[in-house]
Length: 269
Image 1 (cartoon, rainbow, N blue to C red):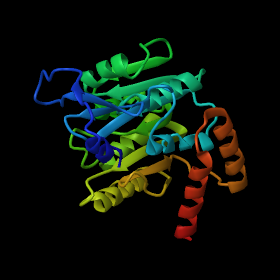
Image 2: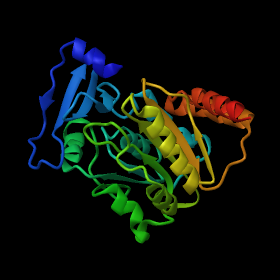
Image 3: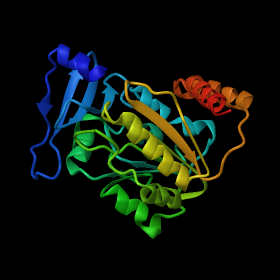
Image 4: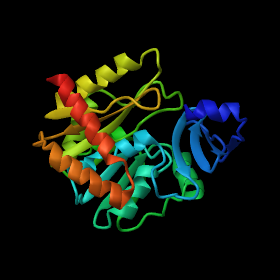
């Protein structure tokens, strides 16, 4: 795992902000071999950026959170819950010029660090980074039915399980999406409780969405799921064609996502 390698290499972790409250964790960053990583009061990696390619997505599980591109080509509103190192926010902002991009992040230190150290652009007519609780955002009826895509990666400093994971939360996420909207979510957790936490999240998603599929585990303990308000018709020949287009246009390994979806469907048969 990347953080273990970084510890072995004796990385220079350094503070970017001072903790003004005991309720929110301190933000630190590290750099190794051209990759800058974001941490919240621990060695757990909350996001990463390759310095020479700041708008590309570095980590595989974060790349997987773009697998909605297999099913939707022209989103109008993309929402991230949890900013991390702003990888998804920047990628969507740079590559979907007709879309509004909203990111919701509770910790103002994370937002400031992303602006200063992770090339996050300032807010404009297409980009809005909100400093607020993700639960408040999805529970606000003013936001319901507005998003084409939700991308969820919500973790505290301990990163032992998703910070929000109830059926009520996922139902509010479904309410935030429009009729054919979809959601991707990173399900990471403490190895001792990982499977139980992952299964509990998948069960909650299945209560709130018409169809839920997940990819094989990566990075030791990351499972990315995609949930659909309306189950799509799946044609793997079409998906592989779309995956090739995504690889050529965006340099993302989308064929691996299709392989994972196909393997999942075979397991369910």
